[in-house]
Image (cartoon, rainbow, N blue to C red; front, side):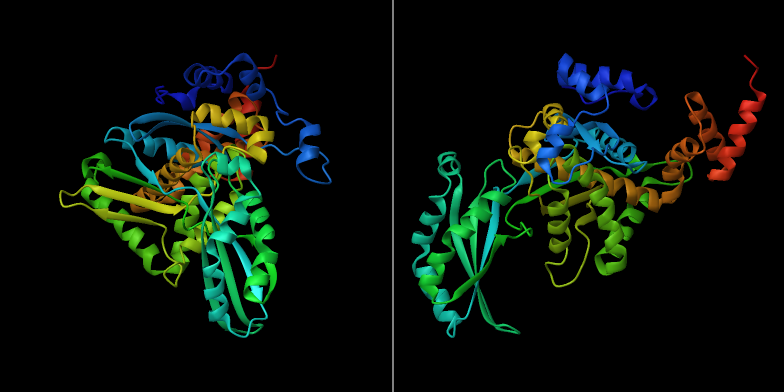
Length: 430
């Protein structure tokens, strides 16, 4: 598949759908689901959560030009914020000319935590639990024959001791579970509950919490990109200066948590829309990302941007990526299944790697804008369309009103209404 769709932005929604359907091999049913509102039936929604009244839709888009490990991929994104899809696609277009994104990942290992209280000898309890390591692993695995049959299951345990808390000594047992192509929450929670009584007997303590950790630091996805400085050349601004500005901006995020919060939010601007579009748990991904950003004892940048010896810009991003292809909304939501079809992924690890590549692209777009004209120019040109819509513009009025505001460098609701009135007043009567 070729992920390049020249002039995609100027297509109508119907033309975009036709182009993506052709490239991704979508059938008539797929096209019908995407073309019409209400892709999630009310009956299905009612079975997904409680107290359902209806459904809530977000814009669903596709970012083009992505190349990951030499393979082209179209990336579905569900997001309400202007400029996100355009920025990711633009950076992907630049990156593909220089080898695209390279990715890797660890195995799909999730942690379940079992909290043990009421032990007077916490280190002795830890030793006893580790002595019964295989017994605990085997018992955990007895609860999921399907997972173990696929090569997954509980692979090991860790035991952490907090000897002096406000509630006394705590012993925390971690089950390390290979969840294969699932996100894994239900699996690891079930295993944690299954081994609780056995751990109580072994440790002599009382088990309280039995639940997964969203700090999936053993389930990491990584992406990297390398861009020559010349790729950032623009009139009056050497590419070398842009590269220096990007690296300076990243260093600011590395040392200052106030900047790091916004820097990392920009990364998540790319990641969350793909997680949402595939029916995965974006709150879990967010929680893990920000906790991982604190792993060295302070909040810092998730990404790194450096200058190679030859002057190339080198960007890397590593973070937890607990996403799946099976279970939950990935199976019940029709558009989540369609997103996976468009992506063409076969494993949860491949999905995680693509998602992190999108996050790195989004981060590069934001830092490039900050290092050059500032963030508002590109963002506001796209935001102008929202303002025009809110002012009542319809059809070709939207592009006309937004273009006039961008030309004036003044994007305001009152100006949009004024421009719309002027255009309609000047239009010939029917």
